[in-house]
Length: 247
Image (cartoon, rainbow, N blue to C red; front, side, top):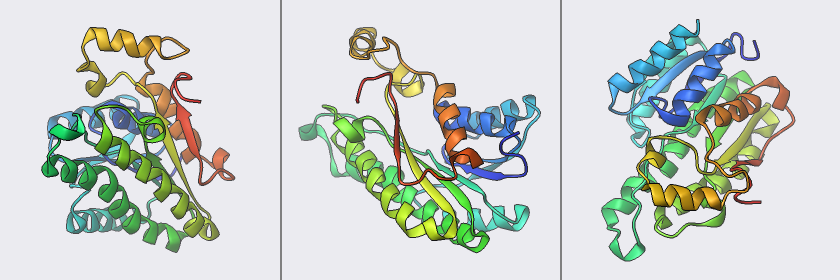
């Protein structure tokens, strides 16, 4: 069990990639804190999946973009568990549209969750990891943060920002044996990609050398590696998982 005895916080883990990561971590022995912002029923399904896999976890409702909520939630986790060994910054939203049709509210909403949320949670959790002198931080970026995508200017900007943030934090925290890495998924089968028209799904699949969308479980396996002791000498890296769509 690669994460036996570890406590992991996975933000935005009520569904999709976050849920897959939470369940995989629990199956490897981690106690998983399932974070969600509003959909308690979906978060409960994640916890049920964890328990079905003989894992352990707890729900933690907080908005990653709210500093006070983040601070209170992390303090509660540390009070209960004594430590946080792994942080996965997965919470994210999108407001896809052409630039001329985007509003300031669209911009603010995406930046608040994707970029500010990653900043706020990492800031608070890293304090605890510094005291522990160990930790693993995995930030969820995206292939569009590397290559761009029409209609996703704000989303791409936040995901590119996460890459710079990851590299800066890797340098800041390395002396405390804390690694910080980013995962950049391509098209993964989730609620978000399920909303794409069939024609668009076909077009995107044809642009992927492996000819298919990825599965959340495949991203979870990569996150597991980066969160484990096997990745102790890996930090400041961006690891793509995109079927060859971007090389």
